[in-house]
Length: 450
Ligand SMILES: C[S@@+](CC[C@H](N)C(=O)[O-])C[C@H]1O[C@@H](n2cnc3c(N)ncnc32)[C@H](O)[C@@H]1O
Image (cartoon, rainbow, N blue to C red):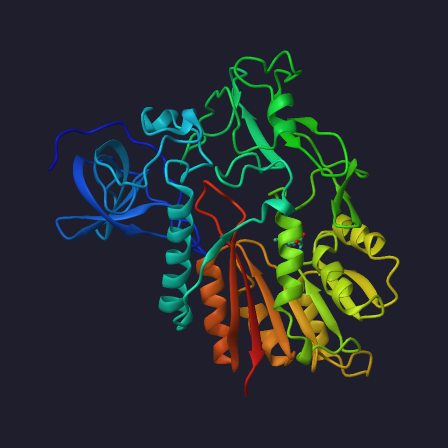
């Protein structure tokens, strides 16, 4: 039922869509009472109004909510934000982050904790549902999957029960008035906050929150502040100006995973949850089928970062295991080379994965034996490996591919491409590496069946 209209707000395209449709200006619509049916990819729930799908934020399947339509520009679906919960789910709880609570006006809700109002067990069930649906709809695979909490033994200091205290990297923004905070959900408006419950304790201590920004040295020209808590060193606060260039020799930090140390640029990629690197190390090691593993084949760690997963493979199968880690970022590759230096069989190649595979496919000089019999670990960014890379990789016929995925829809698309090449999804594990958000990490194994 339509009762009122509110000011327009800019909405990002739904996550997981590879190429967003050309941006249309959001058109605010009515306030509706909605019965929420199920969860969708991207952390929003699905309801219907007059036969039209409405994606509604901050709601739980089974609830009845009063919601403001914030974008009614399309015929096919609208977007809305919960204003009031009229019939609460038994899984609704007080938000773990007061500043992200549904009790606040939607434009004042801090972003980055869009599941924080849902009981942890239900959060994981919803993530499993999204993964299952995506695999069925886009990957053509019916697969039941459980999303598992991080083992507390792998994540010291993290409150696994509450899903708090896990973020080792946080970016805060600084607006024109010098206000420091996260962006509000679904916008680029900076929201001042008094706490960062998802961050590890060391970061909460040094974060310049609730008016402390200028004290902490956020100069007038600062545009963002990065908080970094490496496991092998002190937590650091880094202030960036809008026109900062990446220094030629950026400062480095050390991360420890079991007995290993990894050096990386302070602003370089590292798995964000305090227990993520260990969880993925164990998951990748477990996913590799030892019967299909050949230590002398041209094994690959594609999208390798600073060599975390190449090390996982080597630690399982021995230091003479041949493995090439391929990474587009030259600095990360340099670190990977050094991090894996004590390994006879490891090398690091600074190249884009698509070009690297093209080169392998074209090699006719005997310099490579191709990927026949090889094991490939594939850990692409959120958009997934994509058709070009999966086509090329599958044509090179590795024995098995262990795919680490942080986006269910991108994974499901790539599943379909692998299957079209005769690779079947054999195993699938999922981990809650981003508690209180909608994100989920999956580790899948594909093997050539034809
Ligand atoms: C999800 S991270 C995984 C890194 C590493 N496996 C780890 O767990 O630490 C993805 C990595 O892929 C790199 N990357 C992004 N696009 C790439 C491309 N086209 N070719 C090679 N590497 C790429 C990024 O720089 C990033 O280090």
